[in-house]
Amino acid sequence: MRSSHFLISAPSSNSGKTTLTLGLLRALKNKGLHVQPFKCGPDYIDTQHHTTASGNPGINLDTFMASEDHVREIYKQYSEEAHVSVTEGVMGLFDGADKMRGSSAAIAELLDIPVILVINAKSMAYSAAPLLYGFKNFYRGIRVVGAIFNFVSTISHYRFLQEACEEVGIEPLGYLPKNEALAIPSRHLGLHISAETDYESIIEQLAQEIPKTINIERLLEISTREISPEIEPETLSQTPVPTKKYKISVARDEAFTFTYYQNIEVLSSFGEITFFSPIHDKELPEVDFLYLPGGYPELFADALNENKTMLESIKSYCLNGGLTFAECGGLMYLANEMITSEGFNFSMVGMLDCATSMENSKLTLGYRTIRWNDLELKGHEFHYSRLLENRLETEPVTVKNAKGIEVETRLYRKLNTFASYVHLYWGENFGFIEYLLKHFTSKGFTQSR
Image (cartoon, rainbow, N blue to C red; front, side):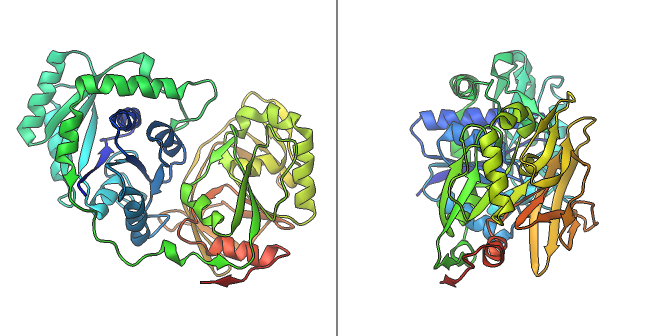
């Protein structure tokens, strides 16, 4: 089957690649095509917007948190039925965890997919030529085949940019004019999820505007190939099939949204998953394993605090030895209290002997490798909150960044409740979930293959 595959990247962040990606995903969907979105790197927000725009799950491709074989396999798995596979890059094209490692360029090379550059042309005309030339020729392992320009003021402005493309042998595919009505609000380093923003309306407007100034048909033509790349031996098929089915509950609502799709897929192989809302539901469902992912609980601290029956239900479950894993926002929720950036204090579950604060916030960011007993875990840390009145017990772990330097991040434990600021990726390394279920639930764990 002939299908189109391309990676949308940029020289740097804030070039508008996510906005363009969302509009393209919807425009292609509106043409009746099966569109599969992917996201380079550890981002768990853009993938949600991708799902909204395309109607298909956004899948992370990350060669720091997972092996190259795993990335190849999940790309094949989710792209093989699609008419178009659109991968959005992370940061600048060559920005990785360590030089190019894990960068968008590394993903493009690994999967043999061409690159479309998005250039912020707000204060640029023919000077785009050396910029494009450099990105095209810096690394011969990738193919930069096209360019789309953002924040273009006039058609005459775009003509200068077309000439720059032709000068260096990159096809100009069109442009987007500046339009404040189509801007998607951002928070911290990227887009965010907010009940106050009508994402559906903005994405649909983008999809209507893009074909007016961007040659979608030509984009599909220059990115068409006959088959997907050859794949190494499968890794996802190694997920164990437990003989005991677990009841797994995952927090999911406005406050808890940061999950990797493959993590949930792995969890589903261990039992039945129930999603619940710490904001809206009254109590925890019947559960063997509780997963509290990250999100923006600080934006909903008041609503979380007001749901007293849910706070009591979760605390009772944890105090009675229920297996729980909480990461980042989930850790904040389990603490005694949460202090917002405005200085307001809200009582939380009260399971963990600490408080968290958004006051005088400072960003902690980066890939993490955790060694815990015989396990090696990979993940990403991204938070502005900090621990106060910390009386938490820690597990004997070492946590290092992408360059192998040990950091202060820890894995905390109280009874069978585990918490960390790291967002773990276990889409390939299912041993983490197996270990928790085997050692910290009353059912234990046995498996068949």
